[in-house]
Image 1 (cartoon, one colour):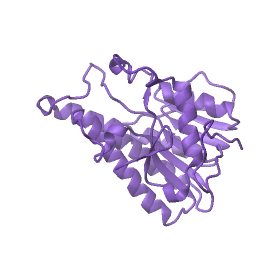
Image 2 (cartoon, helix red, strand yellow):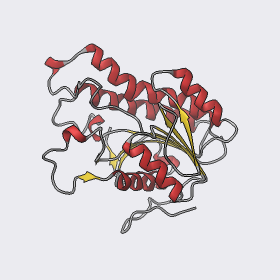
Image 3 (cartoon, helix red, strand yellow):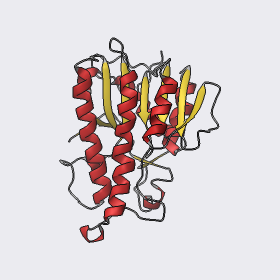
Image 4 (cartoon, rainbow, N blue to C red):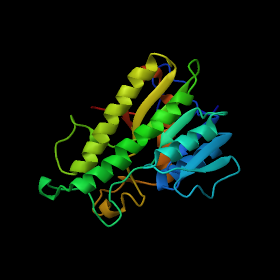
Length: 256
């Protein structure tokens, strides 16, 4: 196993700081997802399932591409069935949407709320990851360590919301965070060694954040490879008693 702690940082007390021998990335065609696949391979992960809508990807020899669609449960169920004989130790949902195809972006005012747009954002950011959890968590061993994580966002915090706006996106991530908490409580009853968490990657230089990068302070935009390193480090250091929470790229707890 490989220690992934950040330079100058330290793991939380009791953390193993170990990367897995196998992992599944749902959303491997995105900037962060692709970087997670590459970095896990580089760190010695022997098998990385790499999921995307196309089912293809230009990765290393240890990557196993598979197809899934966030809005087609049958495709997620089929992907989980493919992994049943050799379940991954880590499952990371790295998919999500901020601006929809067609240009519908975050609403800055309630006056721009559109029920069709809201339903689509919730479908992709909340319901899709929940259905992945439904089919993947049942593969997890009861007596071994595992991790299930989904990319969340600081703006999904109700307690840390001082600006408002971005209604559908904020609501979708807040709902995702609640579901992760629910899953953690339920799984802890039968799977005491597991970790379920939300991960906030920060502002990463990807297509998702591209329309909102203008005017960012120097140093606030992170390269996808660096973001992948940060997320792997945080997840590797989380322990079961931290399950159900959301953590940022530096391992700091984000308030609900």
